[in-house]
Length: 485
Image (cartoon, rainbow, N blue to C red; front, side):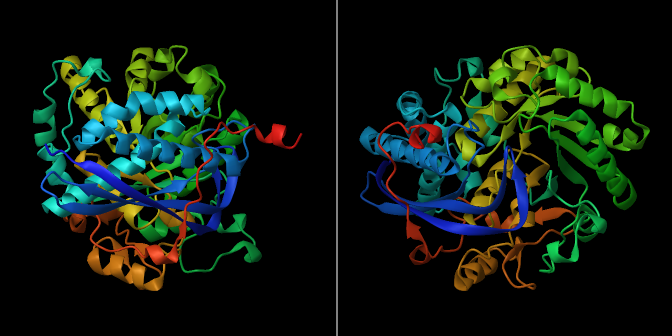
């Protein structure tokens, strides 16, 4: 393990236009903002190094309360990042994991004082930890996989994870091995056209990329699909039946997951949907192909009652309810089998949850528990590459990807930045159609070029083409309706 000190962090933003509208929880998104940071670390021998990380600033996912405007949701995330930078710098010399674990309680405490939910408070450290590891890998000449397997960040079982007491964490890390490719699990959003008749001529984007689910299946030939459901059993059944008709015809041997996005009030609602799916002849293949159900219940109720009755029929995982390091063990006791991995929630959280899965399965003598790779619109470039490196190292065989469908590759970045990323990672990107786009072949992404010094990034970003991130508010945000008087 290596000790270092966080010297400085520069924060930037850039705008992104979606090629297709995306129903994101409780809102429909047509434009987005990406946060990009550049962190400078110092080593005891006097050397310094700079690392990067990027993540979407997303409204109405980290905090879905309607009392805050979308703009305020972004301000909350900026507050989380500002908090983390201050705490990490004040901590001084530490291991990378020591910065995370040592600042974690205070990050949540100060976040709560600002009205930030734990999921929001975790956003800042999630970005910062990745940039720090990128800097460490660059100066040490080690890849992300090498750093984690050799435990260069200094991961340890602490009082934050008492359920891992007695677990041989170092041995677990040493045994991890990144895959050379990973299957894409395509997201089918609630607004997505299923077949050609769902679009008018005026609604067609016409950029050469697939737009309908039917076109996606024929173009990418993927076997994995993530299907959003909206909380209305009748409407969900009708839409799932139309989706199943396409997948049954075009793919045949596929696998699917259902994502409830907190749209159901309680377990009874999602249980009714599943029971009626099982009773619908047209959904027979989809039912047999469904791997698990993701966060169907609103987070306020998701971890208050047992879901064991439904979990006996189909595994359930938490996503938005995974706000704290203790969330997965709590969920597991209530009947949930899994938890999502998202770099926006923290790479150390994902690694520790993967360790928990290994420990639980060893104790159970079966593979009952699992980690699932999910997306929060990880955009092409740094964001998607660091997420792919993480989930690949954790041994996950498929990953939800939605950024490539709703955003035209790296079209938000200058042409020379796109060329740099496509040149450094030719297995991951294709520039034949214009912008640097993820190269999905037979439903798979190739990942070998991510094995480079640093955290999966061998190309330089153009920070001069970005704007500086505005200073975050230092006080608790007033609800939007209060501001309106």
